[in-house]
Structures are given as C-alpha cells and as structure tokens.
Image (tube, rainbow, N blue to C red; front, side, top):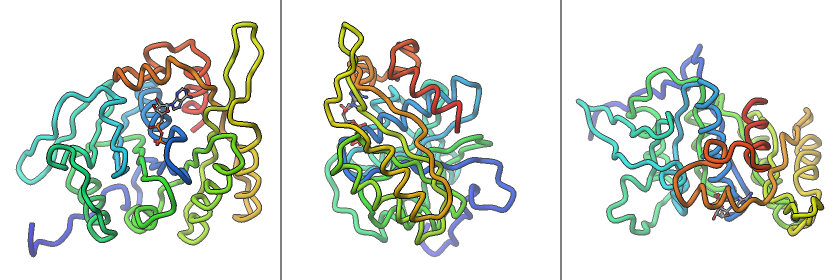
Length: 263
Ligand code: ADP
C-alpha cells in the first residue's frame, strides 16, 4: 500500500486485552519454536483465543509444527490467517516464494512484522505468541517498538553456553523496558526406563538465566518450568500434532501444559 498510512497495531492500543508474549532464545536449536507451538496449542485447548506470529526468518517451522495446511487469504485489504488446532497462524515463510532463503535486513523485517500485526485480521485474541528469530537481533527491538506491552519468554537449555547467550537475549528487555514473563528450560533431562533422569545437556541453565535476569532487571524473573527431552515432542512437531494434544500425558506435554496454565 505505497503511500497509504500504516495501520495501527491493534495489540499496541491502550486497553488492548490481548496478552502478547515474544518467545526469545539466545541461539537456535534450543526448542524455541517447539515451545511456542505447544504453548499456543495448550492455551487454545484451555479455551483461549490464540494467535501465533512466526517471525523466525531462519526457521519458520511453526506452520509445520502446528500442522497448518491452509494459506493466508486476502479479504479486501486484510489478510485472513489459516487456522490449525484452533490457533491462528501467520508465518514469514508463507510469504517467501518456494520457501527460499531470503536476505532480510532490519527495516524489511520491521515492516514485515508491522504488517503481520496490523494487516492480519486476528479478531479478538486472548493471547498472541511471537516466535522471534534466535539471538538479540533487530526484531526484538522492533517487537518492543510495535508492541511495547509485549512480555518476553526466554527459552534456554540447561547448558552453560546456552544460558549465557539466553541471558543476553533476555537483557534486551532491560533496554526496551519490556517485562520478562519468565524463563523456560527445555531439554532438561531424559527419563530412562528405570525412572532415573539423565542430564544430557547438563543442568542449571534455566535457573541461572532466571537469577541473572532477576539481578539485571531488579524484579523477580521466574523459571516457569523444565521440559524434558521426549521423542514424542519431536515426532509431534514433525507430524503437525503438538505433543500437548497428541500425547497429553507424556512428561514433556505435562510440563508444557503446566507452563501454559501459569501464563
Ligand atoms: P529452535 O526454534 O530453538 O531453533 P526447535 O523448536 O526447532 O528449536 O527444535 C529443534 C529440534 O529439537 C526440533 O527437531 C524439535 O522437534 C526438537 N526438540 C525440541 N525440544 C525437544 C524436546 N524437549 N524433546 C525432544 N526433541 C525436542
């Protein structure tokens, strides 16, 4: 819409009743998208009206994880998001021809995010989850500018190195004055058939990030939960059936549903 004024982001308006969570991680591969997809499905399963913006330009894995089959459709000058498991989903991957990698610069990303928020017909949402790209990049700052009330959820693994970069991702919130809703530790352990827990990626990373952010921000940042390694989570993600719906009694699903209830 060249020359036409940008539409206001509804979630940024005073009195918006939508809670917005930006899911962030220091690096890729820690399960940020898996956590986002499962929290979205769990919240929708609780009866909440849920939307997800997949802004992870490097991954755009949310549609597959949530089993989205439809495409966004255009009605007048608004975009209708496809729905899967009662979650409205818009992904940057839906607008990239042939899902080819594209070089995104900061301003392009900002503009894309602005459009995802303002030009998509979300209707009334209780919760909007944003899957951010890993790291401390421009899009975290854009999120803060576009939705000042967005709260950050930091995902980390128990590993020391992952915890350190996750801390930096969370510390962005200090600069942007956003609230950190909490820390989620993923891949915390593997439960062996005899019931013992094997800590494949070490331990303590989530607690450490929570404590470090608490010190940095000056108000309590909680560790919201620990999600074990679970083959069913990975299979569910590959098959488009989030583990919280497909195997709700599995340890990872129980942890994720607990975190969703506490949000
Ligand atoms: P990120 O978004 O941080 O890059 P993903 O959510 O894409 O990470 O997860 C990376 C891979 O690890 C995916 O194949 C996913 O299915 C798998 N995975 C994530 N969390 C778990 C878990 N708790 N147990 C088993 N597999 C997991």
